[in-house]
Image (cartoon, rainbow, N blue to C red; front, top):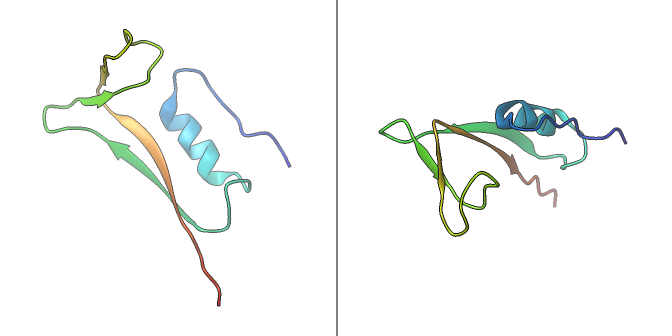
Length: 71
């Protein structure tokens, strides 16, 4: 299986690579781009943050996969 391509500091590009890769599973995949009403989204557990504090980004990318159950 090929490796999942990764670019540091480019979450949207990494999410597209992950969604296109065969490793995650066979379900339906969607890429979500999140932002808040003020144009910011708080993200915890980020390397750029001080411990216990969020970083405010203008958006954040995320991947979602719907499981397919065959009975």
